[in-house]
Image 1 (tube, one colour):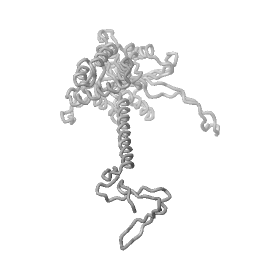
Image 2 (image 1 turned 180 degrees about the vertical axis):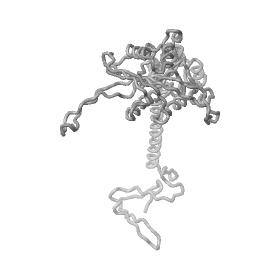
Image 3 (image 1 turned 30 degrees about the vertical axis):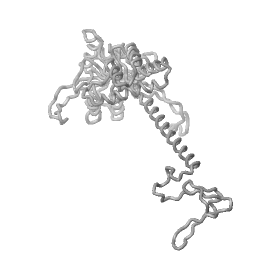
Image 4 (image 1 turned 90 degrees about the horizontal axis):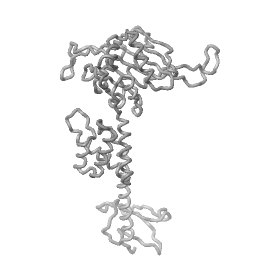
Length: 414
């Protein structure tokens, strides 16, 4: 499953190309009771409802692959007769016309979805005639396969905020009537997954609005899917590992050093032709050690902690690099370099003021001696004037008896 495949599906979800045949759903209250059931022929909906429901379906196909969108396989046994995957196949093949199967899905979601308020469950049925594409991405006028799938969206239903409004029936400003409004989905799924422009019945695409709290445990309990961490979860978990190692070593710079090492490795591996993402396994850690990015002690601690935290599913390298830490480190480095430059300029200025060496020049002085630099008191500035003498311009500075002049660092008698 990749971004290109998802966009291909999503582009079809508009008025002229949408082929949804059926929509079912139910409205569930905070006591897990079904209040309203929905059973509609989708293309017969009025336009205002059609587009609002279509926006909800689109949302389940939005976000970042690996973060908002996860491809979840099924646990062993779920593809056998009586398993959850087998049940989802039956629901898809029924085109949502089987009441018992639709009710069973609603029951699975209600029993396992952890949500305190009211929410709406929506199901959409579709069949996409996948057109053959050539290597140069041109479409051929022939079908490759018919991808039959269902989209499920779970949408919070929230009470609008109290406010004043115009009461048209009473012709006055008064308390606004509060309504229950359907929000965009918090979670959802597409089954089967659409992988390499083809149906993958061995997995579903799970959608989460909040990658830090994706509720993949819900997908496991309701549909028998193997849970998977989002990129945000991997980043948080690895961040805790790094903090623990740095705290143990008593080094504030170790956190930055590890992320710099990860970034360097990522850049080195960026030229790889492999389509598979690079993970932080023992081989990658060994490479970081060999290239001198981290010490042997740090490498052992990272490998041990990652094995304990992630098990046989090591994190993706790209997911765990903390850009904010790298940006903060780069900013500190720029500030340090600037402070060094300022200190050097101050030193040169001090040397210029105390030295009588006429060969010592300041950074702002022209190497060709074409500029005239005057350093006088504020009171003296008012006495300086310019005059034209014999066609040439002169700066005229009156000198009192106790005043001296220093030209190019040399005290000069005038």
